[in-house]
Length: 420
Ligand code: AMP
Image (cartoon, rainbow, N blue to C red):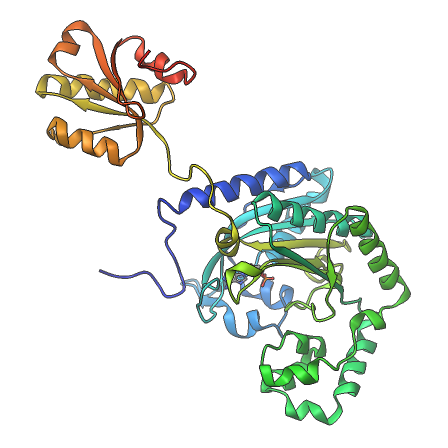
Protein backbone atom coordinates (compact mmCIF):
# COMPACT_ATOMS: atom_id res chain seq x y z
CA UNK A 1 0.00 0.00 0.00
CA UNK A 2 1.27 3.47 -0.83
CA UNK A 3 0.06 5.68 2.03
CA UNK A 4 -1.09 9.29 1.66
CA UNK A 5 1.44 12.12 1.94
CA UNK A 6 2.28 13.29 5.51
CA UNK A 7 0.06 16.14 6.60
CA UNK A 8 -2.71 15.32 4.09
CA UNK A 9 -5.96 13.53 4.91
CA UNK A 10 -8.72 11.66 3.16
CA UNK A 11 -12.21 12.81 4.07
CA UNK A 12 -14.05 9.52 3.92
CA UNK A 13 -17.76 8.59 3.89
CA UNK A 14 -19.12 8.84 7.41
CA UNK A 15 -17.04 12.00 7.86
CA UNK A 16 -17.75 13.75 4.58
CA UNK A 17 -21.42 14.29 5.49
CA UNK A 18 -20.35 16.73 8.19
CA UNK A 19 -18.18 18.55 5.65
CA UNK A 20 -21.13 18.77 3.29
CA UNK A 21 -23.28 20.24 6.06
CA UNK A 22 -20.52 22.75 6.86
CA UNK A 23 -20.17 23.74 3.19
CA UNK A 24 -23.94 24.09 2.77
CA UNK A 25 -24.10 26.41 5.78
CA UNK A 26 -21.06 28.37 4.52
CA UNK A 27 -22.72 28.93 1.13
CA UNK A 28 -26.01 29.90 2.74
CA UNK A 29 -24.42 32.44 5.11
CA UNK A 30 -22.41 33.92 2.20
CA UNK A 31 -25.61 34.25 0.19
CA UNK A 32 -27.36 36.01 3.06
CA UNK A 33 -24.58 38.61 3.31
CA UNK A 34 -24.38 39.19 -0.44
CA UNK A 35 -21.18 37.27 -1.29
CA UNK A 36 -20.80 35.48 -4.62
CA UNK A 37 -18.66 32.43 -5.23
CA UNK A 38 -15.37 32.59 -7.08
CA UNK A 39 -13.07 29.65 -7.83
CA UNK A 40 -9.42 30.48 -8.41
CA UNK A 41 -6.63 28.01 -9.33
CA UNK A 42 -4.56 26.18 -6.74
CA UNK A 43 -1.45 27.07 -8.75
CA UNK A 44 -0.32 30.68 -8.87
CA UNK A 45 2.93 32.41 -9.71
CA UNK A 46 5.32 32.37 -6.78
CA UNK A 47 5.66 36.16 -6.84
CA UNK A 48 1.95 36.63 -6.06
CA UNK A 49 2.52 35.34 -2.53
CA UNK A 50 6.01 36.78 -2.16
CA UNK A 51 4.50 40.20 -2.83
CA UNK A 52 1.01 39.61 -1.45
CA UNK A 53 1.46 37.50 1.68
CA UNK A 54 4.85 39.16 2.29
CA UNK A 55 8.51 38.12 2.12
CA UNK A 56 8.97 38.33 5.88
CA UNK A 57 6.10 36.00 6.80
CA UNK A 58 6.61 32.42 7.99
CA UNK A 59 4.36 31.28 5.15
CA UNK A 60 6.60 32.69 2.42
CA UNK A 61 9.90 32.04 4.19
CA UNK A 62 9.32 28.46 5.25
CA UNK A 63 6.03 26.96 4.27
CA UNK A 64 5.29 27.30 0.57
CA UNK A 65 5.03 24.41 -1.85
CA UNK A 66 6.93 26.09 -4.67
CA UNK A 67 8.52 24.39 -7.64
CA UNK A 68 9.77 25.06 -11.12
CA UNK A 69 7.42 23.54 -13.68
CA UNK A 70 8.51 21.84 -16.89
CA UNK A 71 8.34 25.15 -18.73
CA UNK A 72 10.75 26.74 -16.24
CA UNK A 73 8.09 28.82 -14.47
CA UNK A 74 8.17 29.19 -10.66
CA UNK A 75 4.75 28.22 -9.37
CA UNK A 76 3.30 27.92 -5.87
CA UNK A 77 0.41 25.83 -4.56
CA UNK A 78 -1.56 28.55 -2.79
CA UNK A 79 -0.90 28.76 0.96
CA UNK A 80 -3.79 31.20 1.45
CA UNK A 81 -6.55 32.63 -0.71
CA UNK A 82 -6.40 36.40 -0.25
CA UNK A 83 -3.68 37.18 -2.83
CA UNK A 84 -5.46 34.99 -5.40
CA UNK A 85 -8.76 36.74 -4.72
CA UNK A 86 -7.11 40.14 -5.10
CA UNK A 87 -5.44 39.00 -8.32
CA UNK A 88 -8.76 37.78 -9.75
CA UNK A 89 -10.54 40.98 -8.63
CA UNK A 90 -7.97 43.06 -10.51
CA UNK A 91 -7.49 40.75 -13.52
CA UNK A 92 -11.23 40.59 -14.30
CA UNK A 93 -12.03 44.19 -13.27
CA UNK A 94 -14.72 42.73 -11.03
CA UNK A 95 -15.65 46.07 -9.52
CA UNK A 96 -17.09 46.99 -12.91
CA UNK A 97 -19.21 43.85 -13.32
CA UNK A 98 -20.34 43.37 -9.71
CA UNK A 99 -22.65 45.72 -7.81
CA UNK A 100 -20.52 45.21 -4.70
CA UNK A 101 -17.34 43.20 -5.01
CA UNK A 102 -18.07 40.63 -2.31
CA UNK A 103 -16.50 37.25 -3.03
CA UNK A 104 -16.16 33.89 -1.31
CA UNK A 105 -14.32 30.70 -2.10
CA UNK A 106 -14.04 27.21 -0.61
CA UNK A 107 -11.04 25.04 -1.26
CA UNK A 108 -7.70 23.51 -0.28
CA UNK A 109 -4.59 25.42 0.85
CA UNK A 110 -1.05 24.07 1.16
CA UNK A 111 1.55 24.89 3.80
CA UNK A 112 4.63 22.91 4.73
CA UNK A 113 4.04 23.01 8.49
CA UNK A 114 4.69 20.44 11.20
CA UNK A 115 1.51 18.35 11.19
CA UNK A 116 -0.47 17.88 14.41
CA UNK A 117 -4.10 17.79 15.47
CA UNK A 118 -5.82 20.69 13.68
CA UNK A 119 -2.74 21.49 11.59
CA UNK A 120 -2.17 19.90 8.22
CA UNK A 121 -0.13 20.47 5.08
CA UNK A 122 -3.20 20.34 2.90
CA UNK A 123 -6.16 21.94 4.66
CA UNK A 124 -9.32 23.71 3.59
CA UNK A 125 -10.64 27.21 4.04
CA UNK A 126 -13.73 29.23 3.50
CA UNK A 127 -12.36 32.54 2.31
CA UNK A 128 -14.52 35.68 2.29
CA UNK A 129 -13.30 38.99 0.83
CA UNK A 130 -14.92 42.35 0.11
CA UNK A 131 -13.34 45.14 -1.94
CA UNK A 132 -13.81 48.87 -2.35
CA UNK A 133 -15.32 49.80 1.04
CA UNK A 134 -13.09 51.46 3.63
CA UNK A 135 -15.75 52.41 6.19
CA UNK A 136 -15.96 50.69 9.59
CA UNK A 137 -19.51 49.48 9.00
CA UNK A 138 -18.12 46.80 6.68
CA UNK A 139 -15.53 45.72 9.27
CA UNK A 140 -18.31 45.27 11.80
CA UNK A 141 -20.56 43.51 9.29
CA UNK A 142 -17.89 41.02 8.27
CA UNK A 143 -16.96 40.28 11.89
CA UNK A 144 -20.63 39.79 12.70
CA UNK A 145 -20.97 37.52 9.66
CA UNK A 146 -18.00 35.41 10.83
CA UNK A 147 -19.62 35.00 14.25
CA UNK A 148 -22.99 34.20 12.67
CA UNK A 149 -21.34 31.53 10.51
CA UNK A 150 -19.64 29.86 13.48
CA UNK A 151 -22.93 29.97 15.43
CA UNK A 152 -24.87 28.53 12.49
CA UNK A 153 -22.55 25.52 12.68
CA UNK A 154 -23.74 24.96 16.24
CA UNK A 155 -20.43 25.96 17.83
CA UNK A 156 -21.27 27.55 21.18
CA UNK A 157 -17.88 28.02 22.85
CA UNK A 158 -16.48 30.51 20.31
CA UNK A 159 -14.58 33.59 21.51
CA UNK A 160 -14.12 36.69 19.36
CA UNK A 161 -10.86 38.65 19.59
CA UNK A 162 -10.33 41.96 17.84
CA UNK A 163 -7.55 44.51 17.52
CA UNK A 164 -6.31 47.34 15.32
CA UNK A 165 -2.78 47.20 13.90
CA UNK A 166 -2.97 50.76 12.57
CA UNK A 167 -1.87 51.94 9.16
CA UNK A 168 1.41 52.90 7.43
CA UNK A 169 1.02 56.36 9.03
CA UNK A 170 0.99 55.26 12.65
CA UNK A 171 2.67 51.86 12.58
CA UNK A 172 6.28 53.08 12.29
CA UNK A 173 5.90 54.96 15.60
CA UNK A 174 4.49 51.83 17.25
CA UNK A 175 7.32 49.69 15.83
CA UNK A 176 9.85 52.15 17.21
CA UNK A 177 8.10 52.13 20.59
CA UNK A 178 8.28 48.32 20.66
CA UNK A 179 12.01 48.31 19.94
CA UNK A 180 12.62 51.04 22.51
CA UNK A 181 10.64 49.18 25.16
CA UNK A 182 12.59 46.01 24.42
CA UNK A 183 15.98 47.68 24.50
CA UNK A 184 18.72 45.21 25.36
CA UNK A 185 16.17 42.57 26.32
CA UNK A 186 15.83 41.80 22.60
CA UNK A 187 18.92 39.57 22.96
CA UNK A 188 17.12 37.44 25.55
CA UNK A 189 14.35 36.59 23.09
CA UNK A 190 14.32 33.64 20.66
CA UNK A 191 16.13 33.78 17.30
CA UNK A 192 12.82 34.26 15.46
CA UNK A 193 11.98 37.31 17.58
CA UNK A 194 15.41 38.78 16.92
CA UNK A 195 14.76 38.44 13.21
CA UNK A 196 11.25 39.87 13.63
CA UNK A 197 12.74 42.89 15.39
CA UNK A 198 14.65 43.60 12.18
CA UNK A 199 11.91 42.89 9.64
CA UNK A 200 8.59 43.66 11.37
CA UNK A 201 8.66 44.19 15.16
CA UNK A 202 4.85 43.77 15.43
CA UNK A 203 5.34 40.14 14.60
CA UNK A 204 7.05 39.60 17.98
CA UNK A 205 3.51 39.26 19.35
CA UNK A 206 3.12 36.05 17.30
CA UNK A 207 5.87 34.37 19.35
CA UNK A 208 4.78 31.18 21.14
CA UNK A 209 8.10 30.43 22.91
CA UNK A 210 7.22 30.17 26.65
CA UNK A 211 10.46 31.80 27.89
CA UNK A 212 9.75 34.94 25.81
CA UNK A 213 6.24 35.56 27.09
CA UNK A 214 7.04 37.46 30.30
CA UNK A 215 9.04 40.01 28.26
CA UNK A 216 6.42 40.26 25.52
CA UNK A 217 3.72 40.89 28.12
CA UNK A 218 5.46 44.11 29.15
CA UNK A 219 5.45 45.60 25.62
CA UNK A 220 3.28 48.58 24.58
CA UNK A 221 -0.12 48.05 22.92
CA UNK A 222 -0.85 49.03 19.31
CA UNK A 223 -4.15 50.55 20.44
CA UNK A 224 -2.21 53.28 22.28
CA UNK A 225 -0.30 54.31 19.15
CA UNK A 226 -3.13 54.62 16.60
CA UNK A 227 -3.37 57.84 14.60
CA UNK A 228 -6.62 59.79 14.89
CA UNK A 229 -8.17 58.19 11.78
CA UNK A 230 -7.28 54.66 12.86
CA UNK A 231 -8.52 55.32 16.40
CA UNK A 232 -11.86 56.66 15.15
CA UNK A 233 -12.17 53.72 12.78
CA UNK A 234 -11.50 51.23 15.58
CA UNK A 235 -13.96 52.95 17.93
CA UNK A 236 -16.63 52.90 15.22
CA UNK A 237 -16.05 49.16 14.63
CA UNK A 238 -16.28 48.24 18.31
CA UNK A 239 -19.28 50.55 18.69
CA UNK A 240 -21.11 48.63 15.98
CA UNK A 241 -20.14 45.29 17.49
CA UNK A 242 -21.79 46.50 20.69
CA UNK A 243 -24.87 47.50 18.72
CA UNK A 244 -24.93 43.94 17.33
CA UNK A 245 -24.63 42.75 20.96
CA UNK A 246 -21.54 40.70 20.17
CA UNK A 247 -19.24 39.57 22.93
CA UNK A 248 -15.70 40.47 22.00
CA UNK A 249 -12.37 41.03 23.65
CA UNK A 250 -9.74 43.50 22.45
CA UNK A 251 -6.51 41.54 22.25
CA UNK A 252 -3.47 43.73 21.72
CA UNK A 253 -1.43 40.66 20.80
CA UNK A 254 -3.61 39.93 17.79
CA UNK A 255 -1.30 41.19 15.03
CA UNK A 256 -1.81 38.13 12.77
CA UNK A 257 1.06 36.59 10.87
CA UNK A 258 0.70 38.38 7.54
CA UNK A 259 2.23 41.59 6.24
CA UNK A 260 -0.76 43.15 4.56
CA UNK A 261 -3.11 43.91 7.44
CA UNK A 262 -4.13 47.49 8.23
CA UNK A 263 -6.46 48.58 11.02
CA UNK A 264 -8.94 45.87 12.05
CA UNK A 265 -7.73 42.33 12.74
CA UNK A 266 -9.90 39.64 14.30
CA UNK A 267 -9.91 35.99 15.19
CA UNK A 268 -12.40 33.44 16.48
CA UNK A 269 -11.22 30.72 18.85
CA UNK A 270 -12.94 27.53 19.91
CA UNK A 271 -11.70 26.13 23.23
CA UNK A 272 -12.75 22.53 22.82
CA UNK A 273 -10.49 21.48 19.95
CA UNK A 274 -7.01 21.45 21.46
CA UNK A 275 -3.95 23.63 21.03
CA UNK A 276 -4.82 24.79 17.52
CA UNK A 277 -7.88 26.70 18.68
CA UNK A 278 -8.10 29.46 16.04
CA UNK A 279 -10.95 28.50 13.74
CA UNK A 280 -11.09 31.74 11.78
CA UNK A 281 -9.02 34.86 11.26
CA UNK A 282 -9.02 37.94 9.15
CA UNK A 283 -8.72 41.66 8.86
CA UNK A 284 -8.56 44.74 6.72
CA UNK A 285 -5.89 45.22 4.03
CA UNK A 286 -6.39 48.63 2.48
CA UNK A 287 -3.13 48.74 0.50
CA UNK A 288 -2.88 45.22 -0.89
CA UNK A 289 -4.96 45.70 -4.05
CA UNK A 290 -2.75 48.60 -5.10
CA UNK A 291 0.44 46.81 -4.08
CA UNK A 292 -0.53 43.94 -6.35
CA UNK A 293 -0.92 46.26 -9.32
CA UNK A 294 -4.62 47.07 -9.04
CA UNK A 295 -6.53 50.30 -8.41
CA UNK A 296 -6.36 51.96 -5.00
CA UNK A 297 -9.14 49.99 -3.34
CA UNK A 298 -9.67 48.94 0.24
CA UNK A 299 -10.13 45.28 1.11
CA UNK A 300 -11.23 43.21 4.09
CA UNK A 301 -11.81 39.52 4.60
CA UNK A 302 -11.40 36.39 6.67
CA UNK A 303 -10.39 32.77 6.26
CA UNK A 304 -12.00 29.99 8.27
CA UNK A 305 -10.23 26.65 8.73
CA UNK A 306 -12.69 23.92 7.81
CA UNK A 307 -10.81 21.04 9.51
CA UNK A 308 -10.95 22.88 12.83
CA UNK A 309 -14.60 23.88 12.36
CA UNK A 310 -15.50 20.25 11.61
CA UNK A 311 -13.76 19.27 14.88
CA UNK A 312 -15.64 21.94 16.81
CA UNK A 313 -19.08 21.22 15.31
CA UNK A 314 -21.48 19.14 17.39
CA UNK A 315 -22.61 15.90 15.72
CA UNK A 316 -25.68 16.36 13.55
CA UNK A 317 -28.79 14.21 13.63
CA UNK A 318 -28.64 12.30 10.36
CA UNK A 319 -25.06 12.32 9.25
CA UNK A 320 -25.14 9.19 7.12
CA UNK A 321 -26.16 9.34 3.51
CA UNK A 322 -29.74 8.17 3.32
CA UNK A 323 -30.62 5.56 0.74
CA UNK A 324 -34.25 5.25 -0.28
CA UNK A 325 -34.32 1.67 -1.50
CA UNK A 326 -32.35 -1.50 -2.09
CA UNK A 327 -33.63 -3.58 -4.98
CA UNK A 328 -33.35 -7.32 -4.42
CA UNK A 329 -33.60 -9.85 -7.23
CA UNK A 330 -34.78 -13.39 -6.40
CA UNK A 331 -33.75 -15.79 -9.17
CA UNK A 332 -32.13 -15.18 -12.54
CA UNK A 333 -35.34 -14.12 -14.30
CA UNK A 334 -35.57 -11.07 -12.04
CA UNK A 335 -32.05 -9.83 -12.67
CA UNK A 336 -32.64 -7.63 -15.72
CA UNK A 337 -36.07 -6.32 -14.57
CA UNK A 338 -34.54 -5.25 -11.22
CA UNK A 339 -31.83 -3.29 -12.97
CA UNK A 340 -34.45 -1.58 -15.14
CA UNK A 341 -36.52 -0.87 -12.01
CA UNK A 342 -33.47 0.62 -10.24
CA UNK A 343 -32.80 2.82 -13.27
CA UNK A 344 -36.42 4.04 -13.34
CA UNK A 345 -36.42 4.83 -9.61
CA UNK A 346 -33.14 6.74 -9.92
CA UNK A 347 -34.56 8.73 -12.81
CA UNK A 348 -37.50 9.56 -10.55
CA UNK A 349 -35.01 11.09 -8.11
CA UNK A 350 -34.57 8.30 -5.58
CA UNK A 351 -31.32 6.96 -4.18
CA UNK A 352 -31.21 3.24 -5.00
CA UNK A 353 -28.73 0.41 -4.36
CA UNK A 354 -28.73 -2.99 -6.04
CA UNK A 355 -26.76 -6.24 -5.90
CA UNK A 356 -24.57 -7.04 -8.91
CA UNK A 357 -23.43 -10.55 -8.09
CA UNK A 358 -26.51 -12.76 -7.90
CA UNK A 359 -26.13 -13.22 -4.17
CA UNK A 360 -28.68 -15.16 -2.11
CA UNK A 361 -31.80 -13.36 -0.86
CA UNK A 362 -30.43 -13.59 2.70
CA UNK A 363 -27.14 -11.96 1.83
CA UNK A 364 -28.83 -9.23 -0.21
CA UNK A 365 -31.13 -8.48 2.75
CA UNK A 366 -28.07 -8.25 5.01
CA UNK A 367 -26.44 -5.77 2.68
CA UNK A 368 -29.62 -3.70 2.57
CA UNK A 369 -29.64 -3.65 6.36
CA UNK A 370 -26.02 -2.48 6.50
CA UNK A 371 -26.77 0.29 4.03
CA UNK A 372 -29.53 1.65 6.34
CA UNK A 373 -32.04 1.79 3.51
CA UNK A 374 -35.61 2.85 4.11
CA UNK A 375 -37.19 0.16 1.92
CA UNK A 376 -36.18 -3.12 0.32
CA UNK A 377 -37.91 -3.88 -2.97
CA UNK A 378 -38.06 -7.60 -3.69
CA UNK A 379 -38.66 -8.85 -7.21
CA UNK A 380 -38.96 -12.59 -7.98
CA UNK A 381 -40.82 -14.74 -10.53
CA UNK A 382 -44.24 -14.09 -8.93
CA UNK A 383 -43.77 -10.36 -8.83
CA UNK A 384 -42.67 -10.30 -12.48
CA UNK A 385 -45.72 -12.27 -13.51
CA UNK A 386 -48.07 -9.89 -11.68
CA UNK A 387 -46.05 -6.75 -12.57
CA UNK A 388 -45.61 -6.02 -8.86
CA UNK A 389 -42.93 -5.36 -6.30
CA UNK A 390 -42.85 -6.64 -2.72
CA UNK A 391 -41.90 -3.75 -0.48
CA UNK A 392 -40.41 -4.22 2.97
CA UNK A 393 -40.40 -1.16 5.19
CA UNK A 394 -37.14 -1.57 7.10
CA UNK A 395 -38.21 0.62 10.00
CA UNK A 396 -41.41 -1.31 10.79
CA UNK A 397 -40.54 -4.67 9.20
CA UNK A 398 -43.93 -4.71 7.45
CA UNK A 399 -44.33 -6.00 3.90
CA UNK A 400 -46.80 -5.11 1.18
CA UNK A 401 -47.11 -5.34 -2.57
CA UNK A 402 -47.20 -2.35 -4.90
CA UNK A 403 -47.70 -2.28 -8.64
CA UNK A 404 -44.48 -1.84 -10.62
CA UNK A 405 -45.97 1.24 -12.31
CA UNK A 406 -46.85 2.93 -9.02
CA UNK A 407 -43.75 2.18 -6.98
CA UNK A 408 -41.70 5.26 -7.94
CA UNK A 409 -44.53 7.58 -7.02
CA UNK A 410 -45.19 5.76 -3.74
CA UNK A 411 -41.55 5.96 -2.68
CA UNK A 412 -41.39 9.60 -3.69
CA UNK A 413 -44.27 10.60 -1.38
CA UNK A 414 -42.77 10.22 2.07
CA UNK A 415 -46.05 11.26 3.70
CA UNK A 416 -47.70 7.95 2.81
CA UNK A 417 -46.28 4.89 4.52
CA UNK A 418 -45.72 2.08 2.02
CA UNK A 419 -47.04 -0.64 4.28
CA UNK A 420 -50.47 0.87 4.65
P1 AMP B 1 -4.50 32.04 8.40
O1 AMP B 1 -4.63 32.08 6.90
O2 AMP B 1 -3.17 31.50 8.85
O3 AMP B 1 -4.94 33.26 9.07
O4 AMP B 1 -5.51 30.91 8.86
C1 AMP B 1 -6.89 31.07 8.89
C2 AMP B 1 -7.48 29.83 9.50
O5 AMP B 1 -7.11 28.69 8.71
C3 AMP B 1 -6.93 29.51 10.88
O6 AMP B 1 -7.67 30.17 11.86
C4 AMP B 1 -7.11 28.02 10.96
O7 AMP B 1 -8.43 27.71 11.34
C5 AMP B 1 -6.90 27.58 9.53
N1 AMP B 1 -5.53 27.05 9.31
C6 AMP B 1 -4.40 27.76 9.10
N2 AMP B 1 -3.36 26.93 8.91
C7 AMP B 1 -3.82 25.67 9.03
C8 AMP B 1 -3.24 24.36 8.92
N3 AMP B 1 -1.95 24.18 8.65
N4 AMP B 1 -4.04 23.28 9.09
C9 AMP B 1 -5.37 23.45 9.35
N5 AMP B 1 -5.97 24.65 9.44
C10 AMP B 1 -5.22 25.74 9.28
